[in-house]
Amino acid sequence: MNRQPTPAAFAPISQLAADLRSGKATSVALTRACLARIAQYDGHFHSFLAVYEEEALAAAAQADQEIATGRWRGPLHGIPVALKDLVDLQGKPTTAGSPLLQDNVASQDAAIVERIRAAGGIVVGKTHMVQFALGAWGTNPHMGTPRNPAGDADDTLAPGGSSSGSAVAVAAHLVPWAIGSDTGGSVRVPAAFCGIVGFKPTIDALPRGGVYALSETLDSLGVLATSVDDALQCAKALKLDVAASEPMGLRIGYLEAEELGPLEPAVAQCLARNLQALKDAGFTLVPFRFPAPLVDFKAVTNAIMISEGAAVNDRFLDDPSLPIDPSVRQRLIAARATTVVQYMQARTTAAGWQRQFAQEMDRLGLSALAVPVTAAPAPRVQDVDHNLAPVHFTRPVNLLALCGISLPAGEDERGRPIGLQLVGQAGEDFALLAVAAQAEAALNTGKEARHA
Image 1 (cartoon, rainbow, N blue to C red):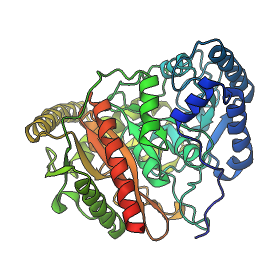
Image 2 (cartoon, one colour):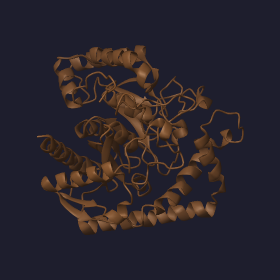
Image 3 (cartoon, rainbow, N blue to C red):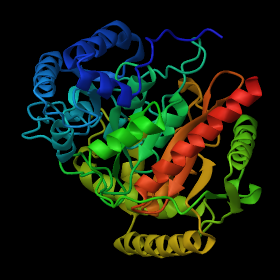
Image 4 (cartoon, one colour):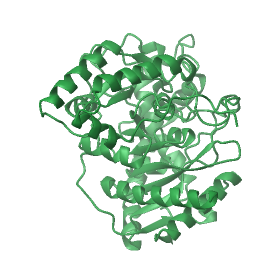
């Protein structure tokens, strides 16, 4: 297979942090390496909208000085990061993936940027995204679509969205980690399509102040990284607003065939191997049902998400000459037909399902669910059907106010990555990460066994 050229992967964040703290490496050198990778490779991958070289190097020099004088801030101190361009950075535009917002200059840092800076992180730039964060394929006809590093170099696979640029920047080894956002799968889907880890915390576990909203009810900020431990290091350093928690045990729920619906054969085969690998590693697998069929989550989610997104962006919709992705415009205009009664009924339904879900997880003593991320691997960009978003298995996590993580779980015959999603209860983020670390090890062991 003719793979696309990418630089070597970064060392794990814990190793980078240890090298920085010991003086074996410097933040300036690491930041220069990231900037050089972006300069050399991102003309191909188109993951970055803007790169802030001068500011990043100044912050890196400050980090080196602090570390040298014993003022180490933790595992992200001196580590470069990229931001999805719906996060405000003082003095820089926040476009939310739209040329309509190119003059939307932030007056102050977003709350998540304040946490990154407090942890000593080095912001190197902003990444491309789907316009207004409304789309899970990762395409953007006006600002450009990032190129998925996975698959054959002759393919142009959809990167997944809406955190497309953040996922591609991590998967192409341009930065060690990145910030994305997730309203119905926008961290987990691109992570799965690009073959990396995507962690969606519980809603408001990471602060959303200064972030361009799609849905105030369903939005979460999240982390794109190359391993569960990297995601854990980020979660700890960013001080998730949830209590420390441990998993209840090694009991994981799974969906039976009639609950899953149709899966592409490669995904179905990969899921079966994943579940067997978990069982072989000592996990107990327990059949589980959501409070309603997964197809029922679409209408309820849309009544909330698209209505709230339309309220944010309605001022742009009536002028057909404005540069708005046709698929985005269509969905936002359609939201005008949603009545207040329908919106409130959807909120009530979601609250009821949240209670039922928690009760069933507790009754079965489950630490997590294991479900697919998407029903198929990434299609080619030219084959994307914007009427069919790949969020069947991810949108319930947002509607039920849960936490979730996508793990690399295999590839199909074309080298397209396939993800496994683990889902935990609201506020059980650290318990989920602990389960995910064990699951990651089990999947890697199963992979080694198959290739032995």
